[in-house]
Image (cartoon, rainbow over all chains, first blue to last red; front, side):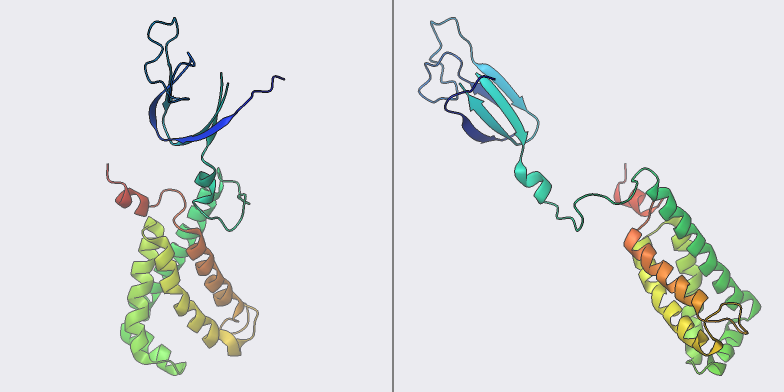
Length: 57
Length: 157
């Protein structure tokens, strides 16, 4: 089993959350548009209810 | 990147339960509740009709007086039994109807005390009205069960 470093625990409300995948964002884990010029695009996380989301890199 | 999505931990705690897990079969229990509700409703309706149609209200009042109860109670108890019985059968505000009918049965149990406990004793022992009283409390705790009208009133669609 892979261990993921620096897990981040967030409470996200229902709705769409754009998560950074290019690691250039200044507002991680959220996308801030810094991926422009890289081949990466943000990950859309759509929640139908408020959830706890753990993000590990 | 790895995402782990969990339900909010407060979601389960937001509705406090007295027991952590249901101790009844939720598939069949609503029908058991309905069976009790309709049985109780029929019994109350029959007793109400008996007081109104057979004894008549003045006769019931006389009967109550002969037991040492206030005669005027007949004019309250008989309509309560009729309306309450119909509401129980319809599943309309079952909890509150059952709770309202409970004191009637406490008095009935009390008046049957001198007859002994066995229901087959002369004039009827107290065990039947006592059991009847317990059943109304059980119905109060259970609510409407299946096919109740209260739910339809609450969710007009």
